Image (cartoon, rainbow, N blue to C red; front, side, top):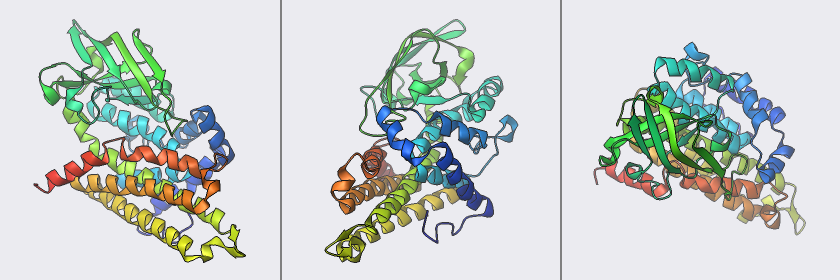
Length: 384
């Protein structure tokens, strides 16, 4: 990260995150391997384990289970830094540590926490969160996957889709309906072992993020012990909503890191590129594009850090996290588009990384709540 103000407002520990994570990832996931792994749809196992071995998987989790109990700001700085190296790796981290891991942290029994969290923090257990279905995306209350109680077990039947990292997960946090007529009041969460009979995972081929791609997941009369319920029966909606502010913070931080990488990558290309006898950055049309990208990246980053500070202060910044996600993810997508334009034909070619940044950024305004849903949340918070 080449900007001299990048560390302003950070604690010594947060500066250390920047200084230690990037060298670690540059060694564990070299740049010349990223595009190859993206083409071959290979999950970055070595880099993920390197993060675990260095203690980063446990950053937001309790020391009791091997974590370090870091703050929301610590987490935002880490995710931003990891995404600067590779946004897909940051997403792989979030899928286990935040989207799945936080449901374990807040909803699992002490026995189940002790069974899952230490292994997760060590890198031996990966998770995925299963919510979206073929006919229910933003409307979570309308999910159809059923969980029917039979003695001490529940039997789950249904289908999930666009589930990130399910193909490499050991356990799935699954949103089900235990009361099909109760809307959001009938949702219950379960932790399902992927080895359970009746679980089938089928990879999907998406435009971007091919190292960590999404999947369809089928549940055909999958039997799950009641002890693997996360939270209380019919109270899954509250568990899902509890994690939304944190999820939006992390998605925003990831987008900020990716924007910084886009700017630096485009700059490295542009300062060496000459047209009509001059570096292309000497032309105002190109320089202003860089200025626009910098404006977008810095404004999103300031908002992201503000939201992290609010969460650390015990606030519940629903409107602010929605604003932050819209700002960061939409800016990220625009920055990638501008980056391609700056690089011209080279930016459009698969031999260069910019096309990957463009493909990876596009899902940001869709996943974790679409920009349209975020705007509806903002309007509701404004009492409109």
